[in-house]
Image (cartoon, rainbow, N blue to C red):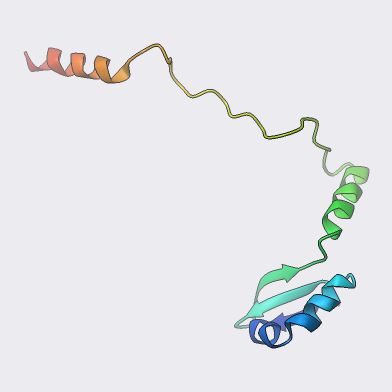
Length: 93
């Protein structure tokens, strides 16, 4: 079973908790009796991702680098502000 540690205990025993995590354990941090965080080894994520890929639960990324943003909506050639001013001027008279 995963160890549960209060924020106060973590503050007082940080080195011991981090040593446990470094050995491969996971620790749940609680505050007021509620779970607020989970400490896991930093090397666990790639192994977990590999297992998920093997099971077919996720797909490996196919693109490298940042994901491109979609183009902004609307036509860049149109001046919306000028059109709005013209429409307002037409309504006044």
